[in-house]
Amino acid sequence: MYKIPSDAVITIAGTVGVGKSSLTKALAEKLNFRTSFEKVDNNPYLEKFYHDFDRWSFHLQIYFLAERFKEQKRMFEYGGGFIQDRSIYEDVDIFAKMHEEGGTMTAEDFETYRQLYEAMVMTPYFPKPDCLIYLECDYDAVLRRITERGRQMEIETDELYWRALFARYEQWIDSFNACPVIRIHIDEYDVFDNIDTLDPVIEKIGRVIEEHRKSQQR
Image (cartoon, rainbow, N blue to C red):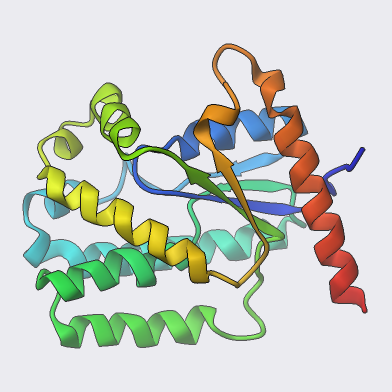
């Protein structure tokens, strides 16, 4: 039986609506870890962004970058023991790049954002998570979950945006290598009716972290 170290930092990644927040809460409860959530409710740009991508995409990405960077520092200053809802790595390669290629962020703004991201994150001093859990799902399930959670700004967003985002996530994860990746399909567990279905997931996380830490010591 593999045990997850009490100082581990585990990041959960996946497209909008896939269930990152629910899994974050459930894993934290099972492991007695702290949680780290992205700022949605008090985000000053998010609702504006959904109504005008061209005007607010750069502002939103800069806001998220700053908030995620501060959270990453906070988690490691605490000494770990965190489950994190969404990684800092997704922003530049998925969200910002999608807006730049789609014409809703200028090339100049994207380059400014990319350079800032690399100066902050792509250094040997930036603390990386012990593993990244990538939540896999069917596209139709994502649309259903977005509708069910009832955020009006998301429901009113063109479905083509969600389809493009889903495709980018699938491409991104295939080349991600900042830390070990654990792919888990959302049908493998049920955090609402039987939280113990997470036990095999926890076993897998513990094994991957142990193997990764051993490899780092060699």
